[in-house]
Image (cartoon, rainbow, N blue to C red; front, side, top):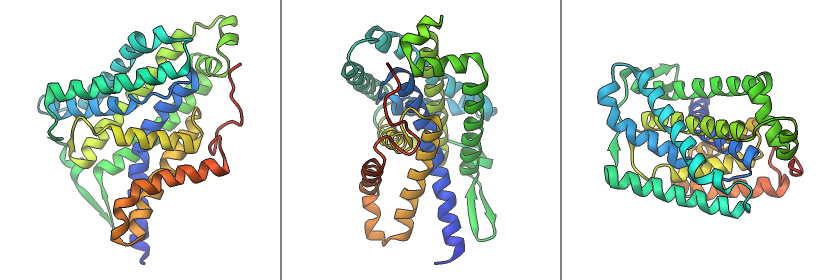
Length: 298
């Protein structure tokens, strides 16, 4: 097997792993601060994709504005659901929050089917992102390069935000111990709402990048990427932001190399392999690769 083929698969793994990482980091942020596995998170990615397929005609002359409008839409929608669906249940058993997230997911999926129908919609893109760039024997799509560099930028900015700003430190304090942070004068509602907004914003970013990569969207596209992002977050250590990025790239690489190096007859089993990888990691490290051994909340 040639080195060019291996390099091509490596690039493909980085591209899909970047998408999983963007969605996984939002899941990890919300779980780390509220102990909520938000299964509606992938549907916020779908929302950005569905509205992006409609708004491209109006915003095609400004791709950056198009990108920001859709990401902000997902972020604000996540903020709305935090306020009306999750905040009233704060302090309730965690299973109540989990069931509510399933309800929110169903509302978003059915709502989008009623608004746009269940048929796939074409997702237009700009020429520079759909172009194939040849580097030696390797081909890289513009959308894949954009996805990787945007994810890298997000990782740097989030690391700086959570470690160097007062708001980010407050978020970490609430995540460590909610009761103690309140005694220190921190209003937990603000860090929790901010975690929802940032996570939902990043899901919206992933939704636009997903549309640019695959060229079409539908009201159910958020389910499987959201589920795989959850797997990535658990592999990396759910609640850990670096772990979410690491898990996303591990999952993307594993998925691409599984399909790329085994016979074509195995390609239909890629999802089985993904969940088998989760099972193996949890057997070896139940807390995930970068997760903590025991719960942090008193």
